[in-house]
Length: 607
Image 1 (cartoon, rainbow, N blue to C red):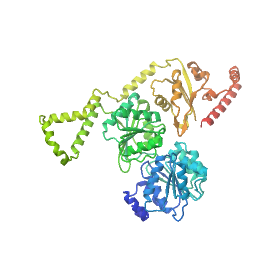
Image 2: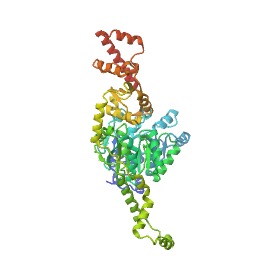
Image 3: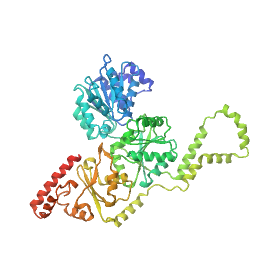
Image 4: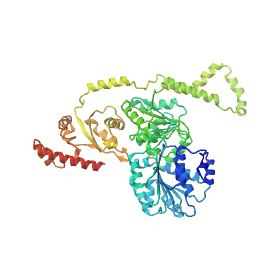
């Protein structure tokens, strides 16, 4: 089925033909007939990069009433980059509809200019939730005549903490409007929006729920944590024409990795929240022009990047929220191209690969980090291939050839080739001479770990500190994931971990006393589902190794007696009374009720 057969107007057909649109992509083929022929609420689940903008943009442009200047369509999206891109695409689609005015509204740009444009009348607003909410609160935007509101990348808006802004905006829209929700993944929070703000929505799903794109292959490399950066360089060298985004968890790590790549001679740069808007624009312009081959970015900064022909997405660290992996891998393999999503992991993170496989309904391939010899061979033949296909400017070079031939006439062909290759290739040969094997022998590592467990059944330092952390079962936390986060955030691999108690909305973990503050500091500015993670010392008599033994003995008396951590009691007097009456069964029952009440209070505080 073609766009013409779907019923697109001649003006839109002319515009999209100039853009090279031939046949609709699957999400467009499913969505366009519904939206063009009916006024409905709609939920569309499709992977990143599958053409969702045209799926809602084309019917909205065709259905708006251009006899007035009322704002009829509002598109909300999570980031400035995506806001600009959607606005640009929709302007291209409406190129031959002069009355179709479209305004991108986002933070970081002059709000006064945006307000002046809104006063003139705008048919479609594309906005980030924060700036749109600001304009509504100032009374500078009229959405009383709104016919459609589109939530694009709804899952990401919620992950980034825009729930309150979204609720406020949706509350200001007329009851007669229709809501369209587009998302790559469909977590519970997005389902809640569809239930709260939509009426019997039509549901369209391309592929399986939360599934990765078919055009992307998934590969993981298993290395020691200390070799992660060396593995990244080895991968980059093995793919000489790499054009990729490298994802890191934190702004600090993003900048550090980018700085190291630049220092080592790679065409790289960083993209994260600490950059000014001018800096972000400069980096993105260079990346789109391929002056940057490797863009090191955080998840938030990379949202909405519209860059074609990415060969690889590299997960320098896997995301804390596994749904985020779908968004990351969806940056490559777009527009009928194929791509590779790479994860560099250590042995403790291997369980995450299985979790992601279950989610995206695809299997990872375990690959071996190339050896130094393999990298050199790949680079050499890449250079030879370029020589073989280089365009020769015969008229310009002809005048120099006699002198060149005379200069090199003493060399035979083989010697000339050797010298030419050496001139271009010595750097790689010198760097990779004697390069170590970075791959991990899993069977050998398991044997070492088992031996280590036998040798370190007790904490070497003799004491643990119990930490309270605002992550629990509701955050899909398991002991392996919590240990992995501690290892990754502290960049240490030898922190001893004791007992772990995971409750509904928070947990306790014992770490060796000398490393407790390092763990607390490492979790600063870390987020899960848009919510900051808080870590603090759970002050109690059970914070030492001796105390841990007493905690184990009392663990049968309820799930945990210290459910409130350092909030378990505000009075020493009550502690003494509890201790004196410990042998009384009635008093124990009373204590359990008090502890349960305190746990409920903690859950409310950190929920």
